[in-house]
Length: 513
Image (cartoon, rainbow, N blue to C red; front, top):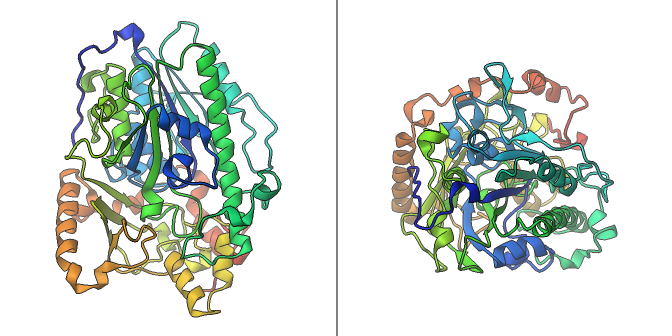
């Protein structure tokens, strides 16, 4: 897909350019919002954005991990097109500008609160530190309801950001919630959120269904509801100031929930993201549901078009995505643009957990009802090595239950294999019938033609996009240095089971090789 920027008839003059509020959760799966039919989550503000704007049912991140997902949002490029930024804990390449930088250079007041692009190092240009998501506004603090929720007062910092806009410029603000990222305060969903174990409609079939896992899921739910509450405060402040009508509000997440087989992988629940967009002045036909495939690389060209900035003026000549404006301006629901019939996904190196700090490279395509995945190194452990605690899966009660139950029964062995076991080179799933991606249709000879067709299209597009994997140079992703100086010895530290940061693993997660 190429960059499309069309200045539509009736486009507002420069001094009336819309504001942009980009609200992004940290690790939330798309099904867990009222607008998508979830009954045991209370998300009235996400649902409000969907009702007064557009709800997207097929939005995907190219890479289901924090830093590479956010890099695609900010640049309009797939992660395999971003050199070092394809990886977690990266040094952000100087050559790739972000939409925030472009808007700041073209008259926008730009800032963020919470988590911006992370984890990694943004670097410098001409000795000046890069502000990939704008100026940081994190000084205002609050007393959160649990010991795991961020102390950053998102709404108060947004007010501070607005107050600093002395020249009354249009603004672009990144609200980067740190919720529902782990760790959680165990039992908070019940004791503080008023939830019950029976509230959950179902537990995914690749986990055991027991009290401990249900409690873990409710703690995750409580943090999503906390994000939604903060979103409501920000929307209320915009309304109070008379700014809401001319603000494009985008609400999404960077990747799926931080549970086994989801975050950090490339399955349907990993990459399929919640997305609602609202613009009261601009979206004349609201409460619509759009079923077109859209990718996170489409945000940057959309924001530049909203700001009336051409590719040449933006300095972002590498954009791969396609503006969403024709979908926002439409009066219809359903499938609106037949060219949007698929998306590409993939990954390289996430958290360190293998010898030589190797990654687990995947490329995939989602088209129609099918997800095809190609695993380039099937001999490697997809969630990280056992002796390092399966590092590409966050430490959690759910993870520990699955690991501790291994070998107890055929079912527990199945749960372990689905989340942590090795995989074949090719995987194919009918995601309309099997959204959990349990039955690998690649094992059935009658799907050989379907696999060949999807693989041919996937590899052809990857070649057009200059993916190093298509030219025998995929090892370059494993050679890139870490953006965190401590990262160089992570593998050895995990091998020694030292006291580790960020709650990635629990002591009981380590297994002998």
